[in-house]
Length: 130
Image 1 (cartoon, rainbow, N blue to C red):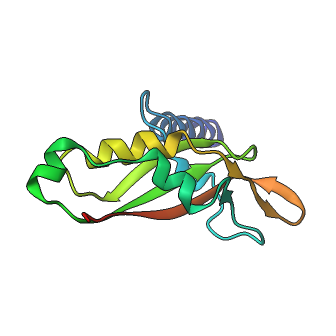
Image 2: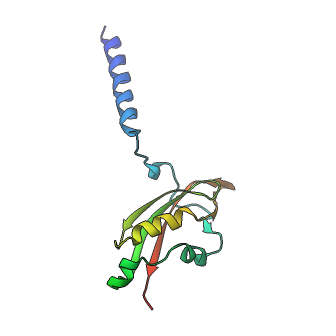
Image 3: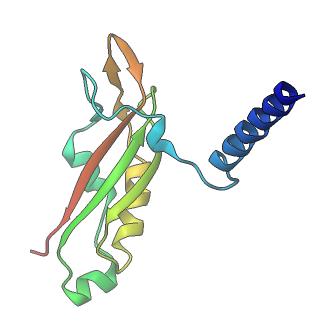
């Protein structure tokens, strides 16, 4: 009887843990992506491709906002951006501009041991008024 109870308890605990890990609408990319690999992903077109995808918003420009937005970008094995996360933003609509711009980027995929892998990279985006 005790073995049966213990087996049921293990099954219940496991199903509870897995059901909490996959809440609808919530995706935790950090556990599925490498942080360091032999060949890190590289944006096709270099840094210029990032700068071409982001721009100042009218509100930020009028307020004279300058600084860096720090992001995490989750890149899959094909070099596409699966998701982005703002670590430190500036507001004034700039965070949204950066998020949308980064999602449009294409990367040379990261490689580890000769295979394309999913990689998490940190990308700072600088905003400076001339």
